[in-house]
Amino acid sequence: MSAGGPARGEHVPKPWGHETVWARTDRYAGKILHVRKGESLSYQYHRVKDETIRILAGSVDLEVAAPEGERRTVRLGPGDGWHLPPGTRHRLIALDDTDILEVSTPELDDVVRLEDRYGRT
Image (cartoon, rainbow, N blue to C red; front, side):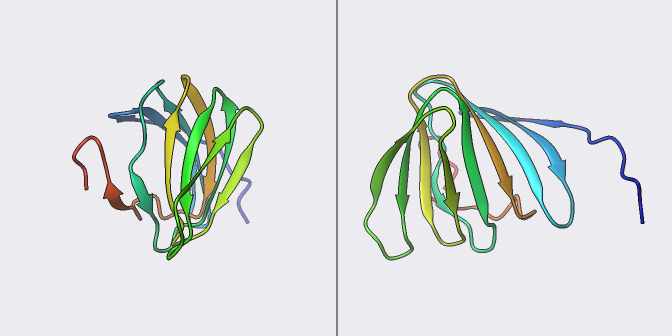
């Protein structure tokens, strides 16, 4: 059994801000997303990835829908969290410069974009 070791962060530029991947193993991943005020992530879902987010600073509108459900908007602020199981359609829209902690299963490239203001669908 390993005693572990340093976890290096990976800075990933995004059109809406950036993310820091601070943990990635074969069992889990951890990221911090920094979303600039007025920017948004794509309206998307994941086939396999299971994630939970928690707002560290700032606020967002979370657009969320079950696979065959109606889209609704929930406002989240510091300390608020949300579980997004596979198949859940969702988008984050930053109302302020916002930092979001994300913990998930390791399938970071499992993104099915349905709408994207940056042309990535």
